[in-house]
Length: 360
Ligand code: PMP
Image (cartoon, rainbow, N blue to C red; front, top):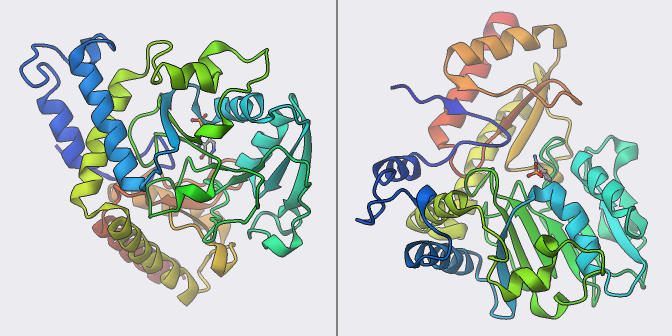
């Protein structure tokens, strides 16, 4: 068996020990005689798996006690509707900061439910930076302020937390949740699909402050109603049981790595290795403003775009896969989430040097 270095933006690489444990427990979880996939979500075995996953997530992110943690479905795209339906709370406007493709999708969906005020946009700079907060035009009557903390396609990331006063801050953290320590108390609601840093697709994590729960629009589907899901411990309907189990194993692995402070350090080291090399040569180009560069998704182009296909093919042959840039931007994108080891980034940089020596 050969495992590749998988630079996929998501669904993405998982820690090998997690996959090994899941494989070992596939047919018989802890003497139950069943796979986790075959368990009732209301049985004592799965209730314990669910509770442990939640408790590990709370511990890792230091989630305050006045926040609920929900394990839902529908993905981050579902959240684009879920958020306005639940958080408008009698208001008619919401602020959105537009930093790229994923923010744009959030804005488009929210417009079905409310008036969207785009408080700031990086569109003019082709989404190569995060707009500074002193230029944001926030609406004092907004129900919430929505940001995408890491744009998976454009490769820009907030390295600071916006201050929105009493207006709840909502963040799509799909591609950088669990990559470093954050202060959850600065947010009203955080959501993320699991398939980059937490587990398989199919699971959506929502972390929400208690006082924001309970005022959903009457049209809100029950499965999307924060209160109904919170009152039922995310089990209003059948939750994505296997994905929750894998997320729990991933959280355990994260804890063994030293938690989020240590993981943040590790991720900084990995990203620096790649960005330092990109900055050291004109052969490759990183389009993103230095202070806003994502530590998770590193897009770059080759000065001579005609070489891109050869670059990707050569990488593939060396066991470095899924490096193709998003179809909307082209080029190359290295996604280096928690499960990407330092050796993977070293191998990529080594290959980039060799490719440059051959074609530069
Ligand atoms: N937001 C961000 C930042 C993402 O990276 C993605 C998926 N790549 C989404 C939203 C959409 O997530 P999903 O496909 O789980 O709905």
